[in-house]
Amino acid sequence: MKLKSITNKIILTLTLTFLISCGFDSSKKTTESFTSSKVKVENVKIKEDSKFAWAVVGMIRNESSSDLKGYVKIKFLNSNGDIINTAKAKVNDGDSFGPGQAASFDYFTEPNNFDGVTDFDVEFIER
Image (cartoon, rainbow, N blue to C red; front, side):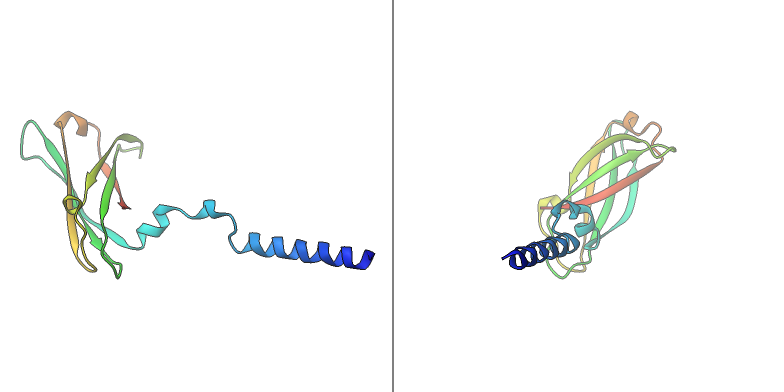
């Protein structure tokens, strides 16, 4: 009887060790790593066409094998890399875009919201 109990404990310990080592903890899965391999952010720049509203514009290229649909999260960064402001903008006006295609996004705001901004961090969020 004692041998069977020890054997069961060993089997249970090995099973739990195996599950944990294989990624049983689902908290390591993030949208960022999933979507970053599917898209490429291109041509992000500021359009200063109006004295009332400037825009952050750019393209998202679909590098996956299926249609994508989503939005971008834009972080306005200063020279220290600090986040000054954040915004969201639809890609392709919310419509899907196919493999290999690039789709545009734009976010308009007051010109003073660009004060101190030296760079942007753009992340695609799939819906």
